[in-house]
Length: 320
Ligand code: CIZ
Image (cartoon, rainbow, N blue to C red; front, side):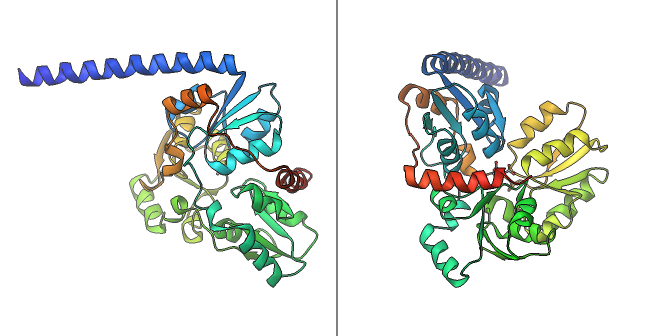
């Protein structure tokens, strides 16, 4: 009897939650039209946020897509530096990050002052700056790169030595693909960096017929054990094209939503339960609705910084 009552209570709670969510989605749709807004969701966002977004993808891809729309407002469901990239590419649009506290610990490992000190130690060495960095750090760099094009960008730089900021694991991975000397900044993404090689071994034992695909922000000892290393877009492509029916995923677990949706015939396993970025999980439907309603918290980049950061991004785009 008590069991039945508990089941009925759980059912009612679920029903209430579902209707609350449906109302929120409707509110978001209405506000989106009223604000002429486009909603972007990074691959690491929670499932519900990915579902209501106009575009889901990696940070630079999203910023470029938004710039190509005639929207007046960009709601960037991601972290701070991503919204800054959107503001750099779309100076005439209002850019809103639904959660002010959604930062990036990797981007926070470097400031312009610290970068300038490092540059002074290596005069005339060009700075290659990973997209996971603040607008100010991009502006103080020579050229940007993403994890998808980092090796190409380093190869294209007209110098035998480069200073690579801020991710040392990505720098190490690129170093394996070039004869140029890379001086790495010592930053790392805490979420990716804490995945150990032992976890790859254990996952392989559990799923011996699965391929292992990891992000280059993972530490070298972990990445070396994988079948595939690449950016989120490269992992998505690998999973669409691989002959493996099962894949163990070594990047933030939000990407599983898209992987499962795009590949209904395959099975995906997360490499480690530690692959959760808390900053990416701050955003939810309520905050998206509030962001559309208030157009806050707004992300802006001072014009001088924006112009210099844009130059570094344009140099990256000129690399084929
Ligand atoms: O730039 C991005 O979106 C990130 C964080 C990673 C990637 O590989 O797409």
